[in-house]
Image 1 (cartoon, rainbow, N blue to C red):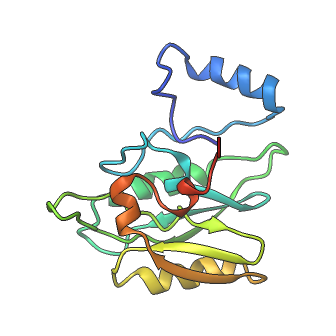
Image 2: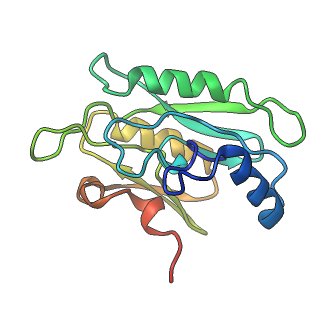
Length: 174
């Protein structure tokens, strides 16, 4: 699953990208979401808006307050995910967790804060937190998805200022 058509390679359309992914990685089904979080400097990487947590089960966020800058986008993402089917033709099960809501940087700008950018380790799940009232409910909701792992919430606001959170920083190593 990918968040939106690639912006790093604008000469490649989604059909061409799908052809390459099927050939190189054997993907059968590729699902596209075309919106990301406000001010997301990753151009809407999927790990900030939706994550598979089990076969056919995807988690995304839902707004908890009227001032959530991503309220409409998050609602559309959940609705779109609910229409998708997996490679076997089964409708996806969509599990929603709270959104952190409005998280601001030191200049008062909206940050693309996401609890979905959690890291899954062998024994632990690390959930980014942002010192909002929704941190604990989000960590608890994610913990319920991984009952065989210890789930902890750790502050990620400083990481987010540099780009991404725990899932982002644990990816590809040179």
